[in-house]
Length: 133
Image (tube, helix red, strand yellow):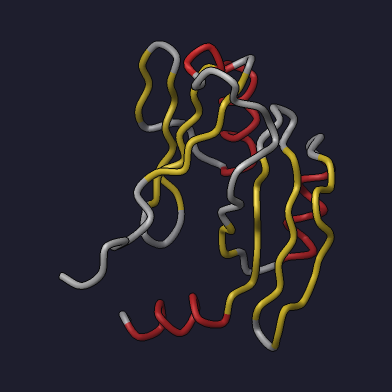
């Protein structure tokens, strides 16, 4: 095995209203959480079945504020369409669509629960995925 960081395991988002957040993400993703326990919901999504966890904000570390921290970008096939859908679902623009170079375009929104959700088209992601076919 190579490298210290071997792959995305779980992205965790906080929510004051866990039920509303769970419903919102289920609608966005088109799947229900595969794992639930008090104060936590988890979805498996994408080509590699990465985990998106929703956690009741009561469990957030002291002093945590939203939005903040790093932005994780999820690859999407239709970036403008995905951003449009997110905004229509009540998210607000955090960073508009921006091309960083050929094949690398990003955008981010703040979900209705105060978390930054990054989306992008990523040529490298598609190259890696094609190589595993």
